[in-house]
Image 1 (cartoon, helix red, strand yellow):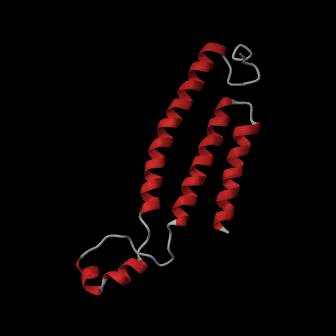
Image 2: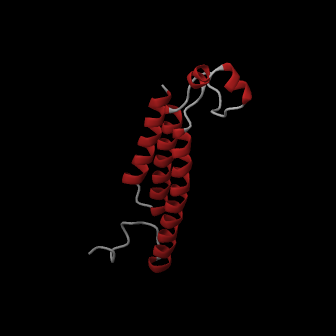
Length: 118
């Protein structure tokens, strides 16, 4: 069920990115899609009843097999952290393109910007 909700969130973002004509709404749709993918990656690495993958003396004495079987996978967390930083940079770029386009044409509506057609 949570994976279906991630898919639904992704489809809402895709709808906003494809159907809407306002550039700001398109940017918001793209960001919603990115957050849906991040949520999906975090849920892939989740383990019910899992512990943080931090080793201390107690875990070393108890045995590594039990620690490995009960710890949460840290790789998706690292990937999502990297993806958040990259999405912040892409958001800044998209917003700056929206601002420059608004300064030049005076609108965010992509149907009214006729001079961009090649």
